[in-house]
Image (tube, rainbow over all chains, first blue to last red):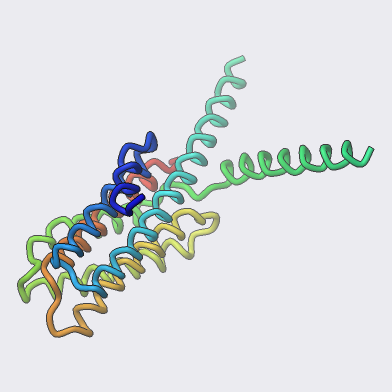
Length: 82
Length: 137
């Protein structure tokens, strides 16, 4: 299966994060093939995809902790009402 | 008996992980006005700076963006129990560093590359802003 086809398949992934990442990667390799960006610019931008993925993962972890904190505060409030 | 001990050990480890997560959540770093203002500033500079790609005016914008991203990385790194934010701001600073290096190491920088970099920086700044904006008060 070609790289383009694999990226197109990932575009339909149920996870928004993965689908958006695949869309960005597809656009990037299309720009490189069209000669809009140089080889070293392309290499750096591919590296940025990994940085973006790491940011999305850390944001997800932070959101999970925030939700847990809010739930605990809610449970404490409920206990003080009883 | 051996299998049972392994099962008990696995369950105990999972329990520890869950307790650790709850403990970390209770003690997590709270919302910080300065942290939020700094990421908002990076987002805004990236948003407005993209229009300057392809002109000489973009160079001071890139330098400003790099300064701000390192400033935020250093600021968040000194806040205790702020692991996820430190990770995010460090990754963002790496993205901006690449852009800054291109403008200082190369004679010409492509407009498409510049536009894509500003877009990536803004998109990630929005992700970070949303995450730290929701931190508990």
